[in-house]
Image (cartoon, rainbow, N blue to C red; front, side, top):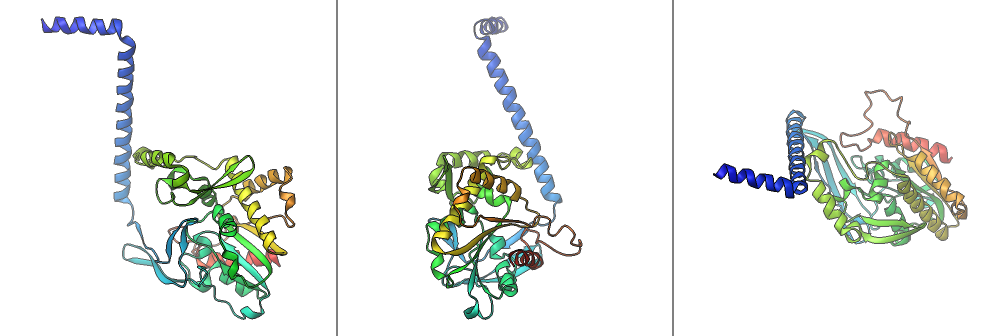
Length: 360
């Protein structure tokens, strides 16, 4: 009796609600497949973690503090030690020091006789994570360029939007003693992603970074990413829980697009234009660090700006320096970067030599 009733009910549902049943079955299969894929990726990630060497452990320095504009910024007149280790092995243990203007201290001789400035901006590459005060890019440049007084404005996590905001929204130039010189920005692809705001960044440590957007050729500062895109960040955080995305290292956007390089080009152009309002004699250089090719696309974006008549408004066009292949012939025994990806003192020295040769 019960089986007959169930058969009649099933025939009725198939006759009157076949579309709903088909949709439900499809959704069930889809959810089941997702669960299977997630489970498989979780298993593979856990197995890889067990077979991997001990993870890198960083005892971060205590120099940084939250900044309402930049997100992260060094505190003035501080010193702190940062340590990187793997298991029991200490890879580096480095002392960092800052001055009254929140810059990393750059040792150099005869500052009173140095008539030109050299302002260095960028992220932890410029700051010199893992190397001593006298081994950073700005310090080694000062040793090779006795007429330039070097200043280190780099800090971990910064991108092209930080250069633009440090110049236009903050009084960072007040501590520069000279009236003419050069500005150097150290670039690699991930920094442009920091300006774009990709999923990996905004689902982890990046929501408090500044958001600057490009709308019809104009830059607009919209506060932090967290303030500008709260719904998008919640969506990214939800998506980042997927082990499938983690296993296949999927991101959004998956790669830098033309519009992203256009944003970077506008940020550099606006920065150069502001510098020319502050100094009569100043040149902006954007250098591409070894192994981090982003110059060709940026050059194309700057060419599009020039075609629009904007780049020509600069007295001195931005100079792009491509050092992506600088270390291609270096013997394997030479350590050019730490396991966390930061350049060693050797790499900073090679970049400095190339920079000094190009400038002089």
